[in-house]
Image (cartoon, rainbow, N blue to C red; front, side, top):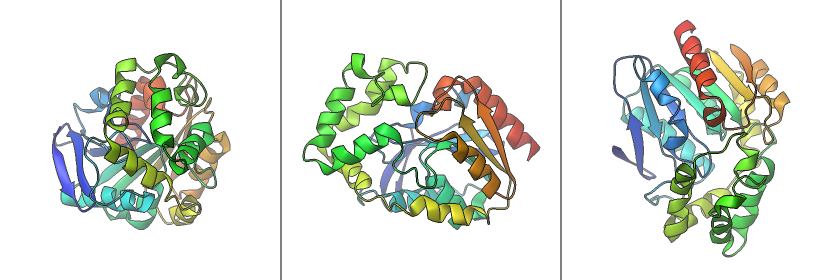
Length: 274
């Protein structure tokens, strides 16, 4: 994967190249760009698809600036600027940073897609989100959490991937997500810093700004989500002046894992029509 050195540090990213519409896919906490591995093949033939790995704990290179939600927002904006990405369809799953990017920096975006993500006062979301927060505030807690999640028989528990997906994620993919946290104390420090520097009002502030994002917007919500309240999808769609809601069955938060074909079809239709 190519790398780019940004103000906050160096990140890796996938880039399919090509001349089609630009799609930037953002993943959630303790995942990396491989969460999109089932989606990229369905878009790459006629879209340029970029998949940065953000400093959420599965990144390989420790950050020069300790990450916070605000640092990640600036990093995403700088990533778009440095690669001169224009008329971007910004897609985000699980985390809520794209809401603030759209509210504060709409200039490079043509479209916005929010997928079963943190919103409003659901922050941090669900049992896994709260567990990360507790672990980050407990000496040695991040290391203990990762050791527990590293035990394959426990991954489907509600505190693990059982809250995020209906269908099991291959162990080799999960092992890749967890490896940096298991092997590098600096990566653990990055996740600890991020989780202990959350501003509780951040997404409520972002929601106020979404009303000014008057561009095509698609909200995709999992009907069986255990972490993100179903009513938040409808509420986000109403806030966005050109918002539209699509719900997907037989899926939890990580729609790209549970229903990739349905998601690709929605994205292709949305980008083609907007």
